[in-house]
Amino acid sequence: MDSQQPPAETTSLPRIFLLSLESEAFFDEMYKDLIDSLLSKAKVQRATKLDPALRYLSEYTPDAIFATDAALLKTKYATVLEKVISEIVQLESSTSQECSA
Image (cartoon, rainbow, N blue to C red):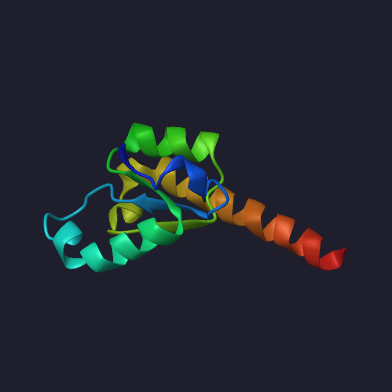
């Protein structure tokens, strides 16, 4: 897993997870400004392989998940897609409970 995190003093920043399981070579260059902007405003983590992606999603609940390529649509990444869907359902559930309170 590629670690792209701001300094430790920014622990209150939102946590963003980039899923780049089949990232194209041009991605980093094309979206450099966007990634730099995210890094200045959030704790950003990026996974480029299946196991690290699953491990991260098991250990953390990111505030946002960006799929940077179409890999999640492939059968071999079904476990990651299921985990992402689970995170979304969990987030929606906690948001609904907060709105009801």
